[in-house]
Amino acid sequence: MKKMCAVLLLGLLMGLCDCSAMAQAAVVHNGSDPSARLHLREQPDKGAASLGRFYTGTPVEIIADAGGGFVQVVIGSGRACVSGYMLAQYLAPSAQDATVMRSVVSPYGTPSVVVRSRPSNSYDAVAMLEVGRSVCVIGTAEGYCYVLLDDGGVGCLAADELK
Image 1 (cartoon, one colour):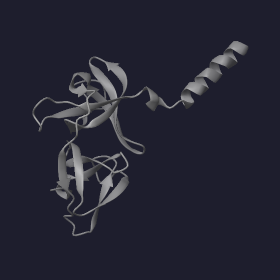
Image 2 (cartoon, helix red, strand yellow; image 1 turned 90 degrees about the horizontal axis):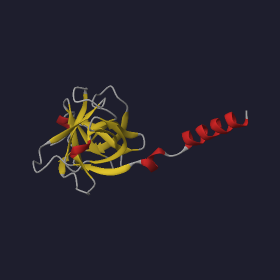
Image 3 (cartoon, one colour; image 1 turned 30 degrees about the vertical axis):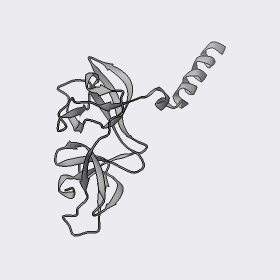
Image 4 (cartoon, helix red, strand yellow; image 1 turned 135 degrees about the vertical axis):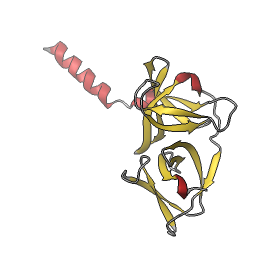
């Protein structure tokens, strides 16, 4: 009985630990072509659905080795993040900047635009950005762009909301 309680307590404590302590910082490194982008996949498989394609310099946290050359990664922090799987061979430990800068525009004539948690207007709003503001675009997905937010999070804007 004591052994079983100890195992249960250990399991509970492990569940309370901050898993980000196991994370390793890296950046997407697609080679010398600045327009090349790396898929973030739903599953660790080249045939799995893509959640988006990310530029060289995009910061990621490697969470775990997923096998088959893939690693599980998180892009962004806190509530506004996206996670999935990337090919490890296209990640590097060096700190390169994601340098695709764009200006926020409003095709609706509003003074600001809504940043969504995922690439669709049906997802939750995670931030508002004022028209004219510069943002760092780190990836694309189906008519949307992933952008870095001031708090370290990631959100999505429709491609026509950037110039």
